Image (tube, rainbow, N blue to C red; front, side):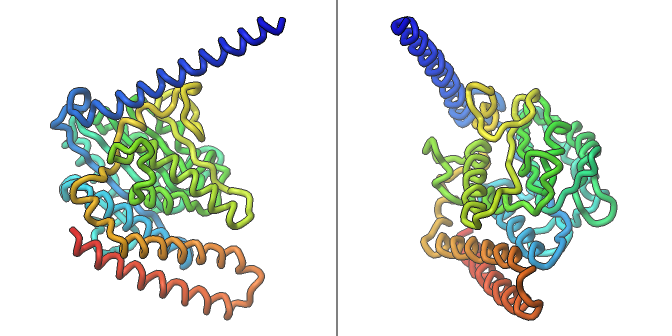
Length: 350
């Protein structure tokens, strides 16, 4: 009996090892070959990216949302996406914003991109802000009439690119995952369901993932959608642990067009192959020039200030209004100064 048990254990272990080997090989092939230009999409495929920032909400979160959106847009711009293929729509005008994130402008821009894009191109969509869920449909909070998950799905359905990445980094974003899944599309949601309604910090760490070489787990000088998802998920968990609070958001990834989303891609659930094959940022060349020690230090300082603002938010109920406002204004001022200095240095590097 012992021998049979040991044999079964060995057999199970061998099967598990074979599954892992096959999955890792697939990840390697999916990640390597597109960089070599010898599989779909062809070498002449272009990347189109759209960042959409919704309504700010209150003062504390508004500054964070705007800052994370700007970080993400700047990263994509530095990575070499041409101006006529990179767009940022936001509720508030600032440098780099292409237009207001109203329903009409979002629809018009996506229709324009749908007419321009080809099957071999790559499309990336990033949503940052607040979302809501009424038990039936997800809504992204924007100026004027909101866009529901089904309305987003109709717009996205016109995009012909065979490889797509849609990253919804809002509260309640988990409710958008199933409506948006399809073959050839990576869908990442900051929350596991529409019932996770609290403000999401996932966008901070997702943007950070694209700036931190530590995200490049396979050391191929590129950060894939899967690597960014894993880094952000890990850092979100660390953030809540540092506050000694239960996490109110649990990010999910779905890239088979058939699953319900997973917290961790693995050979057992079959998720992650497409996400591993689509790079969101390359670390070589001019992108690496911007990673100076001073810039890294400022980014770390910015992260600390943002986390301090959120810790203060949690303590608001136990503080008097005057003390709270005084501390908040001080943190926001320091954050603004840090962001301004960071912007100046990065502009010099470009």
